[in-house]
Length: 163
Ligand SMILES: Cc1cc2nc3c(=O)[nH]c(=O)nc-3n(C[C@H](O)[C@H](O)[C@H](O)COP(=O)(O)O)c2cc1C
Image (tube, rainbow, N blue to C red; front, side, top):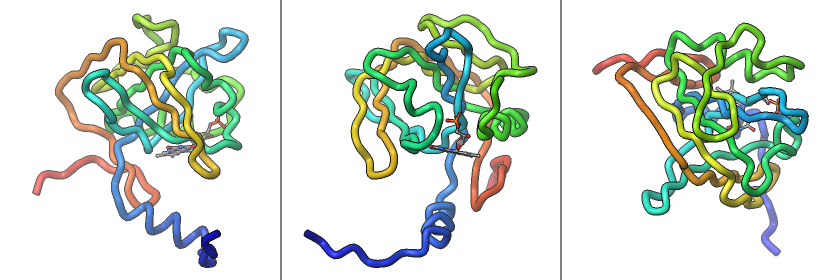
């Protein structure tokens, strides 16, 4: 077995934070049918055919228990105007959707308004990833429009700037 080197978790987090990510809210209904969601920066594309995407979720996040095989969810890609919404879904609130507009989508999960893209998914697979789970979603439908994405970089929200 490999001897693991000691690592400062704060420094590791800072190093990970050197790579900017987009910001999404992954939304779904909880076991009682109540809309909920979680802010996710680890969302990425995975496969074209079949159409798959993935994100990772800490095993100790309250929402991790909701992701099981075939569970419908929506990945909402946020614009800079939705930075407050990103912070709202990054807190352990009882009602994550307070003040947030929902629209229907083709999977049985809530969809946030005013986003630059949406991916309506069903959970395709869940893999182990250390202290995270890796959720693979099969994309059942998507939409996108013009506009900037919200960026998370070195612990803060940013708007993209052209070079
Ligand atoms: C910009 C940003 C990106 C985040 N990305 C992730 C992520 O990819 N995976 C994760 O587990 N938590 C991520 N978080 C933290 C969760 O959003 C946060 O812990 C949230 O409270 C979890 O919700 P829950 O407690 O309802 O599960 C991120 C937070 C922010 C602000």
